[in-house]
Length: 128
Image (cartoon, rainbow, N blue to C red; front, side, top):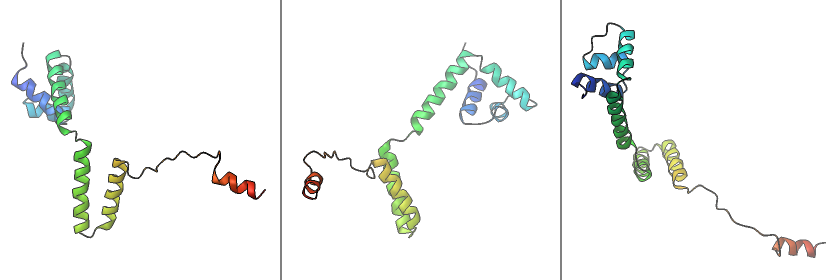
């Protein structure tokens, strides 16, 4: 048996972040109290069709709300332009630091140093 329009509305309201009571009222349930609304949601969470639909909604909202690294970097760059135009150099520096960190630009370059046959050993041998 398929979910009713009211049950789908409840799942959509819960997915949008409403409390149990707000979601029940939004979906048209007549729960007189928060407790009654919680009970209604608890009953619906036992319904496998409802849970499946709610999980589908959650996965869709997650996949459409997650930005790629490039999108975040582009957003930071636009905010830097705005901060610079407004002479807000404190914000500009904070945004630049964040962009540098995300891009790996502020990581120290690692060099392999060998002391065998090094200039340091030559200096030490001459002064010993």
